[in-house]
Length: 214
Image 1: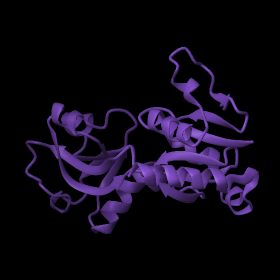
Image 2: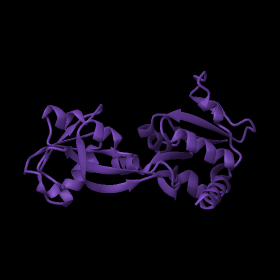
Image 3: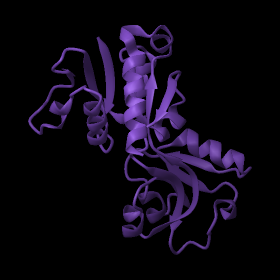
Image 4: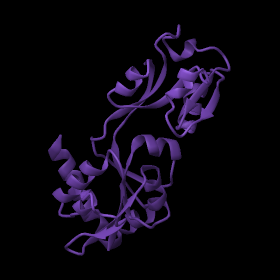
């Protein structure tokens, strides 16, 4: 039986719709009364695990799930040993550098040397500032990173932005985009190579459904 790791949160509804389109129904996860974290498709062909977004690639890398759906942002940050298969096209957002609207800086390279930059995405932030050869101190935060500049703890933040509403409501503006992110289908490398449980059939159905939606 194929196991799929599904992300809680913003990507879940679209992920379940996509899988329904290829004959796998995990819509029970959308039931507000559901407390199960592992359910079977009614046909018995597959099961799904409901996990935190950042944990999806972990379950896939360690083989507890043969397939998973995760944001590109998570894959860039964690760099898991998984097979990257399909850009699913939904969950579109961007990784950005933002500062207070009152800040004099309008591009990342203008930030002072050794500025503090708050982020949940520590590795992505470090990689970016290294790439522009600007020494900064990355401050790891796992809650509302917008508070970094508001309180004066950091000069800037690196965070995911979708509509930009949260930034605007907290008096912040984007000054740089690092990359665009969408949901991606990933697989356990060995399961993918060996075509365990006829994995390739499911993958090709998902690929076709994704292309049809474009």
